Length: 512
Image (cartoon, one colour):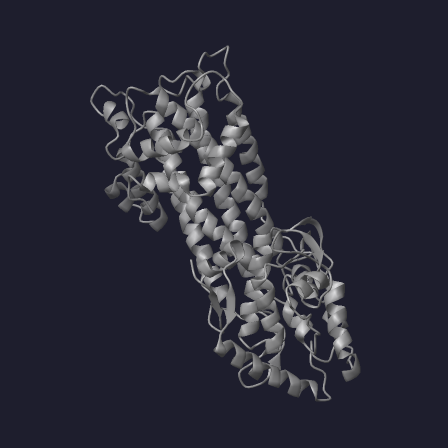
């Protein structure tokens, strides 16, 4: 964990976004950023002093850009922009998302290409460091012309208006919270209002956080798949390196290597490796686990590449160029982010779907190779894990609905000036829900596979999967009569989220 994150004209690393968004790591503007800010502001001030119209400096916005705004009205223009655009509604957006978009907007401001004053950027940095988080709501961004409404709520708080949550999570008037933190509200000047809201920061912040979470979840998916292979008396031969090399997708190779490591030295696998075993092939949900998890990894790698490019980007309209020109552009359009956000939701749904199929096999006496029906203690009297699979199936069905792309839609706005939008914010919001669903689906598979492995005694699982079973058993009892299962699913989901499952597997096996 960094002591602080330096904000400069250079790109942020994804880990810095996670640190500031989730762990409240402080931020500091670098000397290079202050120099760039001052230089960029000089160009905007020079432009503001001229008679010719300049978008965002001396004109209205969107479809109202044809009106020239006289100098005496320009401060009001910026205030009005922020007040009118802070129009989101719906459920409150998570604190980590708001902090991520604040950080990413600050990084763009620090490039000097937006023309805001150093003081404005310093105040945004101080807002982050004070733990003050503007209240932002779900609906209001079309993923084009920036995440306008969400960013406007942040800008509104900078001016001392609207509502915020303080470090303790209490909703407060922004003016009161700023005063208590020793911060002076910003009085916006020419172009600053537009520069504060015209970015892809919400979409990008959610993409970076999602990539971080999905990388860990794909590791857990390999763990749960390996446990299911053991529980169902499957073979590890299909994961052999020479077989994977015949189809050299990088993600598939990583997933198969993980499966081999997780199943190494498994007495259960060894028990049916001889000539007495009459099974020729395992079901696809076992045999093709690396192909599915691997494809998801490759999709994730592409998304991470897009995120890295965006983290190196300056998103504003207009922008201040190095030679002093202030030019309109279309770089605020969210299509690059929207596409990969949607693509990740498709991968998430498929990884969850194959996990549910493995769970179902462990519960069915016709396919579980000797396990009791529904892994029940006394089938008929006890229902065992019958309904945890229903819960898993309901989540998978929802994930398939969430996998429907948002980016294929476009709803025009601003009197048809903004006539094609990306819907990237919506793609990001549904991806966050999808990742929560995948977490619960994998928790159910882990819970089920752990019980199935216990029921294979006296045969023992591999050292790595045994370590995972032990981690689960520290929070969830082993097989027995029916009991309240919802808390047990929640407990294992917490172990997935906090990294306990992966740490347990890695204590006994080298996995990615």
